[in-house]
Image 1 (cartoon, rainbow, N blue to C red):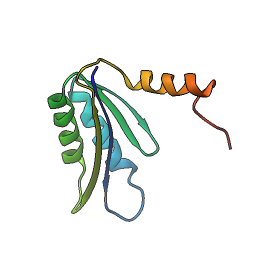
Image 2 (cartoon, helix red, strand yellow; image 1 turned 90 degrees about the vertical axis):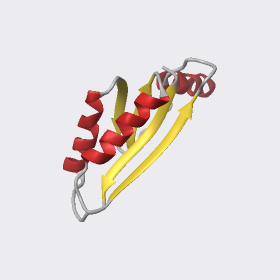
Image 3 (cartoon, one colour; image 1 turned 120 degrees about the vertical axis):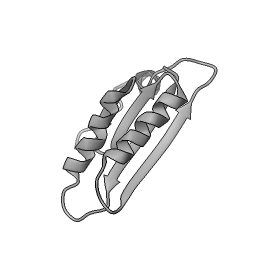
Image 4 (cartoon, one colour; image 1 turned 135 degrees about the horizontal axis):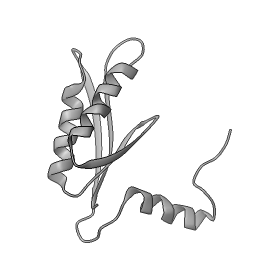
Amino acid sequence: MTVVAMLSVAPVIEGSMAGEVAKAVAALDDFDVSYETNPMGTVIEADTIEELMAAATAAHTAVDGDRVSTFLKIDDKRTKTTTARAKVDRVEEELGREARGER
């Protein structure tokens, strides 16, 4: 996969956004992408920018509300195939440990 992105979609509402965020995440299942959701957003991987953008648009559209906030950060590596995991692996190699800490 060559396109990696961080997607965050949320309604601007009072109270829990979990139900609406779940709709956005579920919308990704209709596309040829892999993804992993974390507390701050969802990392998406796709073979093409077109597929990634279509998935991000569907996630945004899936959220109900008068106002929806979407953040999309894209890393479109055009000359080399990579994965989100490979990026983390490289950082962990430099650290000499897992890239996580415990509180």
